Structures are given as C-alpha cells and as structure tokens.
Image 1 (cartoon, rainbow, N blue to C red):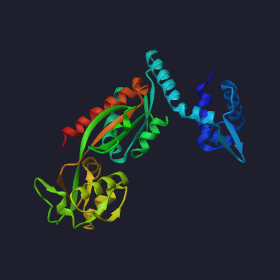
Image 2: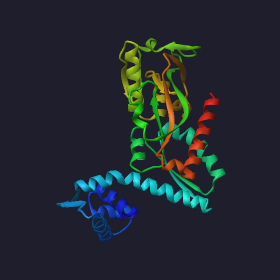
Image 3: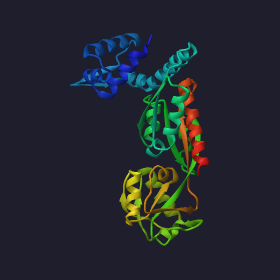
Image 4: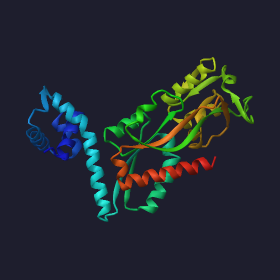
Length: 304
C-alpha cells in the first residue's frame, strides 16, 4: 500500500535531486529519507530512483508516481480537512497564491472577513502570476490560486480540469500624465490615438496583451520602459516618460499621482477568477475562502 508520507518524500527527492537536500526541505535526516524511499519501492515492487553520480534520477515508474502524487495528496488533504470539520475541530489551513494587484485589493478584504467568521482558519499567501500560479495549484503547492485571462484569448480550455469561481471583470484603461492632451478626457478614446506615444509596459502577460491590442489597431507600440512593478509604471507615467495601459484593478492597487486614467475603445477586459482542484473545493476552509473572495470581487465591482 502506498502511503502519502512516502509520496511527499518522493516528490521532495524528485524536485531537489538528492536525499540530503530532500531531508533539509522536509526537516528530517538523510537516512530517514533513504528508509522511506526503500519502503515505497518495496510497496510498489519496482525501483523508483537511480543514483547517477551525486544526484538521483527517477525511473519511468518513479516519473509516473510523481505525476500522480499531487492529485493523490490533494485528495487525501481534502479528506483530512473535511473529516476534521465534521468532527467539530473548526480548524483549517488554506495556501493561497495571488497575482500582485489581486493581493493588494481583493485578498485583504476577503481574508479579513474570513478571519472574522472563522478565526480557526489559517491562510498563507504567496504571489505568482498566471500561468505559474495555476501550475502551483496543479502540482499541489497551493490550495487556491487567483488568476486571470483576457476575453477572447486562446487557451480558454486550460482550466477545464479545475473549479473556476468568477470574481469580477476587469477592464484595461490607459494612463497618461497630467498635462497630456488626453488628460481629463470624458468618455473613451481609441487606442490608436496613442500610436505615436512612448509606452511603458507592465507584466509579461499584460505586455503581450498590449502589443496584441495595438497591432489590432494598426500600429506597434514603441516600448521604452518595461517593469513588473505597477507603482513603477504609474510613477514613470506621472513623470511624463510615456503612457501605459494597465488593468483597472492594478491602478486601484496604487495611489496614482500626476496620472489620469482614460477609458479605451475597443474595450479590452480580463476575467479574474479563483481556482482550486475539484477535491479541494469540498474542503470547508477552501470553500469559505472562495466565498469570501467572491464577495470581495462583488464589492470591488460595486465600488467602481
């Protein structure tokens, strides 16, 4: 019989490449890792690891087992958490991964409400942009991932194996410095009116979307600056160094000074969602986190 603790050790060995490094990651000794790997190989009846010099290499059977380990561990975690809740322990742990503008807008409101309603639930937060955040979820390294995708973008089926909880729809807006000819513009403007401007680009995925939208309008943007830091984008625009296009949620996550936002046509929107695995969606702490994130998204939409 395969034990979950053995699978966790196997994943650690596969990711670190050695028994000693896996032991450090798991907080145990190298001999303990070696013993658990011997027990796992005895259970499955075939070698899972081959030593090559100072590193360990997975056999074909080992690769297959690692591939299935994340789903198995997620299922066991779901069972343990649900049983604990039914037994009245009122405890839970949720590992949340979010992209930066979600971390500073939706997440604080949701987690404050969650703590007030369920003080025994502990939530940890890490930041990652999609698709990295989605891969962390599939690999079993988080329980809930905030992600986004642009309307009409290819790969809509990439989340078909996940539980998708819509949070809000976020529109792209243009940022122009105070004193720009389009500052204080009422209504929306065509993105083609910014064709001759210097551009400041955001995160790689948003940067790709910017280029795609501009090329659809018949021009290629001249990108003079690029940064993943949204406050830096706003600061560069405010200093008069160029214009930018950012999701509205990103603008709301900072205090723009010397900057004006302008609605764009054609409208470009992104769908912001919370994702989890089907088994984890049944865990009470995860379900409560999804509910609070959805409420935070609704409040954010209503405030606009």
